[in-house]
Image (cartoon, rainbow, N blue to C red; front, side, top):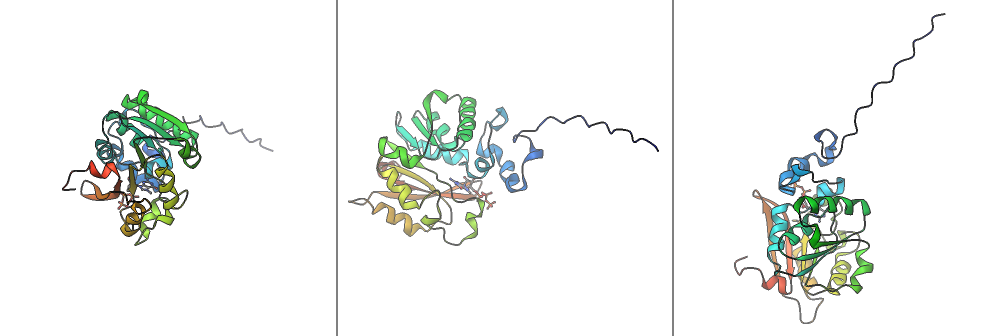
Length: 237
Ligand code: MGP
């Protein structure tokens, strides 16, 4: 009887990181194509996880949000993810407390802040926003909470109860304990009547302005500015 030769094991290929196009899953391939809009310094080593790919605020929109903060503002970025908004606020002469519940995502955000050279202006906190909020004060609370993944766009009318990890009213109320000056980045299919109702949670109602945010003529989301952040918007917006 012939003895079979033992197959040689193939040499292991080096593991690819998420920055390599080959490993980008079909779910996030379209966001990978937008990588330089998400982070202009992407090629310098910016890192994202799957959720980061589809939920980070495109850099021109994050820069727009940051441009409305006065110099030296203390900004609480309540769901900071991989750091897109925190980096832009820090680049705009603000100090940022960046809260994120996922420790691995905080590592990515620290890496990304280093690439932009703004790590000294951001305090990264691993924690639950709802637990931390009652102990925090700031000039601006920035809210870009999870919208429930890319399928958010399938509904005609996105409502506040679809936000994660809690109902949008609860998220907004927690932010209000920090400051009435709130910037909230919301889906383009958001029910705007519900956003208006948020301003009535305060007495007297908070000043509110909303704007549509586009990148290369495609609408990516809607920003609601409450309190002093609404007054900071130019009149024609
Ligand atoms: P999109 O609508 O999923 O993709 O996300 P795209 O390619 O713009 O639209 P399409 O018409 O080609 O399908 C658009 C933008 O919305 C993203 O770049 C994010 O800034 C934002 N976004 C999307 N999601 C699912 C989230 C989310 O869960 N949370 C937050 N904060 N932003 C999100």
